[in-house]
Length: 425
Image 1 (cartoon, helix red, strand yellow):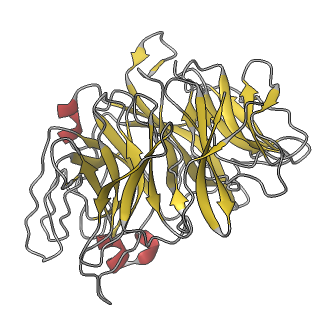
Image 2 (spheres, rainbow, N blue to C red):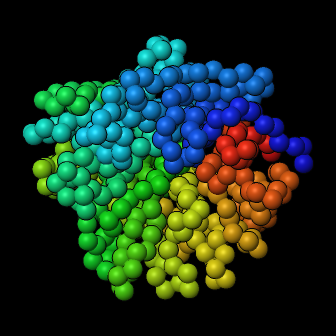
């Protein structure tokens, strides 16, 4: 083993997001500063140079707001997107799942970011604007759009049980103006829609879901469908179904998306912008499909621990996810976006302990197993340790390949705070 390198050292938490944390040249890692991953109290978005250790502050929040969960565009000139909490929070309006927004920073253009998603909570609602909070914004492989997860303020106020987690898409170069009838409303730089379809009470044994989350773009240029045609845009996500017995059963789902940006403006069965008693709805032409049916397995369903996000191979042919094997051990599994039976990729003696990422060439995954960062060969299932085994495992939140495939970034807890490390591949 060539050995790992610690990049951050101070007494603050340093939090990597689970994907897209590297600049395209593989020289910088972007992160936010939080005591713990679940404590959204960071003030700055920063980056660290992996060669020199130089740290740059990209943005500092003000007026009582906090920021976090930064990802980077794949462009040669990086753009940074992150969650921004509300300014001047008070007892009636403070950071929450439905009170946050996406913020996009092009540091070479301006020191000030722009708001990604417009916010309009006054009837009549505005198509392309959101009515709640967006989260974990991830650029598509070409940088033209972003995915995000979402919770809705209007539904939360009407009936919290109707505020269901969903997956959305933000399209660049389509700015949206909000009505500004409420003091918390604002404009956005992107046209935003929800693309998943949820229902508060799924029918047991059906493909209906009440939660869509942990999404990932499929392929650098989509995937080849069952007809041999290329589906250019698609997202995979975890959807919570109910088994025939009425028990929660997370499964793998796909949404096929329109090729043409203008198609996102065309409403489907229900209004894009939602109503006072209905969530925003997907555009016409968005197709949601269930891929896995695991109810009859000894240990059914996609696992929730460790928390992970569905990640597709660069060619789009394989969606990787975590599920227990017949012994009850958490393993990496694969399934085709076209459908069919999932197959077991890893055969570890102990649980996979982390989220994971694909090598840019698509032949391996980086993850944590047996308290080490390891390289998992997708074809053979063999694992090769990249770091020494330690008594306390590396953080399971993020294990991310660099774009050139030469490094893996991850975190360890040192004296109670996450610090950023890299290891060569």
